Amino acid sequence: MPVTVAAAAAVLEAGHWQLYADRHRIHITPIARRSCPDCRGAGGWWTGGPFPEMEACGCWSERRELRIRLLPVPAWPNEPPF
Image 1 (cartoon, rainbow, N blue to C red):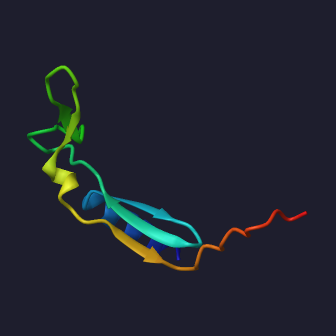
Image 2: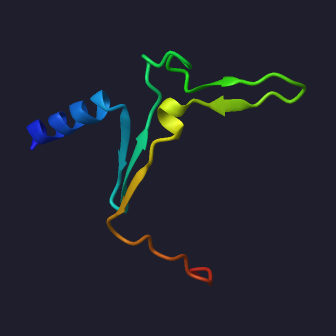
């Protein structure tokens, strides 16, 4: 089992992916590449003007996310417990 986890972590890191998992879901998201010539791993850059905004780089923002639901999230009750 630990070998499988280590291999999966190495593959995700090599492909520039970030893994989040809990009992309700597995969420895999892309991360910025350090070798990107546009953002140099920062994930984007600031645009000029009176109201500067962060513009996302295409090295990660144009890649899809993957979400896998495992267990349903329990619904909150409408009434207080006591």
